[in-house]
Length: 269
Length: 334
Image (cartoon, rainbow over the protein chains, first blue to last red):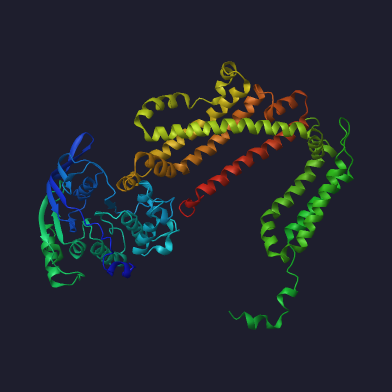
């Protein structure tokens, strides 16, 4: 679906903005549940160099998504320091865009107007309409600009959400299990598209997933978390060339290691 | 699929009479019966003599003729057929009802006379008193428009405030809880005393009746917006103003319209009561004026006009909703 020309063409004259550097220092976070503190993140330290694709892997409900909310600036951490390009994160910023597990498209807006949301919110829509069209073309939705979200399939809706993020030319793309609810064929197709987009645009990517294979197929580095409160249990460098194949013996081997780290190694043997 | 073979032996379809539209024929019969009853039987003229009996009969006969033509030809024109088909049963029953009405009132006085009136008396009222009725409709509409617009606007703003701002909610919520459930008509004596004119008092009362449901529903609409919608907009650089105007309000709009419908119903009630008790114009006033003169024909005539006005306004609001919320089609069953 991804427009191949746009992606394989050499970088345009105005080179895409490079990704940001991430520096998370001793981040801890807790929620209050009926007055009781509920720790979700425990002393998490993590860095990412510009353009890196980091997958955060852990059991469901361990607090990975919370970490993304903190990086996005939607909430301040209870403790610790969060630096993006050496500047502390104080709030949301359109250079760090989140794609959520649910597409969360606004049902009262057409696909085009959904994708235009970021530009409209910043008052840039009038001058930069073409960026909306371009983003929709990149995700292969240019024929659906005037459709309403309820007319889209799950995969198309998630593509629209991706376009809404890409319009802002993010320097950090934060993916919160964006493929979690898609059927397996759509999922495989979109995994490939994500990698190609990331390679073409050069943004830093944080991906939360609980799918080991997905993490290994997409990321340059996989960070494995413990159950809640999330602690970093291991970091695995995945230096396999793209496009990767799920039956590559090296990948299968890594997969076994990671499953072992997650405590379910035996179940799959 | 094998149609070409099957119809080869028959006449060309277009040459065959497609058949009668039977409900049209039946309607022609009942309306003709109504005309015959109206014209053929003598009016009971102990109290009033009606001048429009003959005209009513002519009108009914003319409609009977129209239905007969439709019954014979509607099937020839598919577009016309589609439009008249849903009306069929109603047309049949209406003709029968008119005949029955005529028999029960003007012809046999089964229903006692000054309190029940035959159709010809309604026609007389519309002919003799249309000017006063039209003035009353305009007066009612103008009063309703002012009160409803004011109430809807204030209710909407209060509702958004309640849903959005904790500080606003702190002060407004208890007031809403205390004052909101009070029927607006309970303010009536006080309002006519406090306000400089009965028109302003009535505007206030109608606004009050409209505002409460609009505020409550807008509030619940804004409060029930998916918080992820805000997160999405915030990560894309939206400021609070954008969150209210472009996220909260559009998302709450389906709720707001429920409130607008409830408010419109409530405003009709207050409008009529206010016009009956204080304002010296409008359909409510016309009703109580007609009652004072025991002019029951005028009351029925005014009631019919009022029903048309109210249902027309509701229809208008439906049209507005369909326009603004067209995106809901396919999401929600209406």
